[in-house]
Image (cartoon, rainbow, N blue to C red; front, top):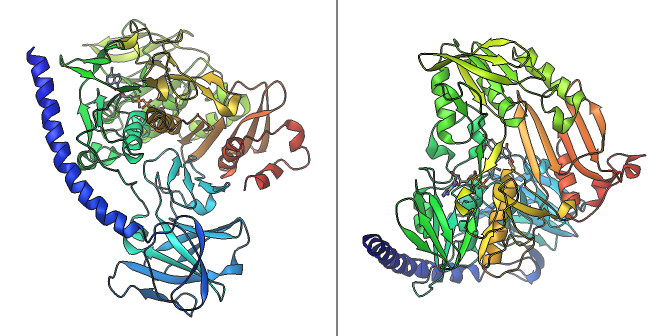
Length: 614
Ligand SMILES: Cc1cc2nc3c(=O)[nH]c(=O)nc-3n(C[C@H](O)[C@H](O)[C@H](O)COP(=O)(O)OP(=O)(O)OC[C@H]3O[C@@H](n4cnc5c(N)ncnc54)[C@H](O)[C@@H]3O)c2cc1C
Ligand code: FES
């Protein structure tokens, strides 16, 4: 009873807070809507101030602005100092489907794109990790980042595919009757190069509650998308970790970011302003679909109108003697990364063994290398990443690592961990080798955090993943699942169902779930995109599926290559590259457009298909 009362009290407090905040927001909204009626969506032909005509493109602009006669000159708004306007080029300086970066006075740079005769001007750097978008893959009406595949709409700057959270600023472009391309930009947008979508308003009368279980990238994106797409009810995120959603990718890059605040995608203030309640350090223990209830480990229960499950994966721990000794680490959460870094210390006096020849093991080994006395990577395969990229590239990666001093033990695994005073000291391998080990890092796969829904009636796969359709709906009405735990159709792979652990995909799932919760019916359309960076070499991968054969273009020894992965029908199902951007981003865009590529299409020119994406 006490728990019920406290839940009611909590909900009352939240309602009062929502009322106050929504009042403030509604006032803000009035101002915003007054301003935005001057904004232009898309390309229009309009009369400019004065008698000459001009074509104006793009949304995030203000009204008015005087004409510049000279290329590169700047005029500022008379009433405020917040905008800058400049003629950046002549209309014919850009061919169709061409992009160029221009200075806009001394205030910053804009990326101008010409497509179908129309101009757009957006921020120059990807809002994820800052890749120069000029090197990206220009699709039909959108631009895909060359590094990790995020997509931005050319007309609005909105982020349409992930990773990353923010949209790009989008500036007003006017083509004058003299053929001058004039861009008008808010100075603060030029400086930040980012834009957070309007979070909409909350209504105290709206009784709907969306509960999101899991505070990872998928849950966080679902929450944000619900708000930015107009959901006015309550949003509660149950997050087992004691942090706001953060960038998990950095966890295996040991020592790169140690401050959790810097890893978090959003601040507490952001969530407060958006009326998104994040229950940190709270775990969902059970769901009761008949009563629409989620049970929490603090004894409370939450009632939902719609439920999004995005509880992600947890590292597999091998069942071997000595695995409970101290200084044995998995690599999943912020604390894992900090514990590894702290235990390594700064004296380069630790022998480190890493179990696992895939991404997590290799990234951990590479990032610990300079801080350790020795690093040995142990795994069952014959070479690093051999299962994905094949033996040739595996051997080249092996050389890359060995040149940096990393040792390998292939085709073997650990059978036992030996310790002293409860701390690991060595590991024994199936091939009889005993390796000294002050630390052991485990990178041997994951299982799904779905035990808590086992008896709920939800349809689970044998591996524990949640089966969903192309709208991320489970077999139970109003329950959706996404991110790592979703066994979902992949449009780019003939809608075959797969469970894929990529951060961009998990965010995309979050957005699609939000849209479907809001009954804005949306089917999954994205292309899985993955990457890793090993000793400065960036490997990207787009597509999915088990390959029957491969074709390598480039130089494997220098780790500068493209691999085409074919299925049994010789269709290209995936592509990977190392130091050959933006080819993988272009392939992702190609697949996104529903196009198919076959081995025979690569005969005369392996990259002719890149011309067909815009
Ligand atoms: C070290 C590391 C590096 C990676 N690098 C890359 C990369 O370079 N590129 C790439 O594409 N992908 C990468 N990934 C994969 C990527 O991080 C995942 O695919 C992504 O985080 C999945 O997001 P998610 O929201 O589905 O799950 P998660 O990120 O796992 O988040 C789920 C959250 O839910 C919480 N939770 C679990 N159970 C409960 C419960 N019952 N109640 C409440 N909360 C619960 C978990 O504690 C967790 O915080 C990496 C993963 C790791 C671990
Ligand atoms: S830097 Fe653009 S997606 Fe990562």
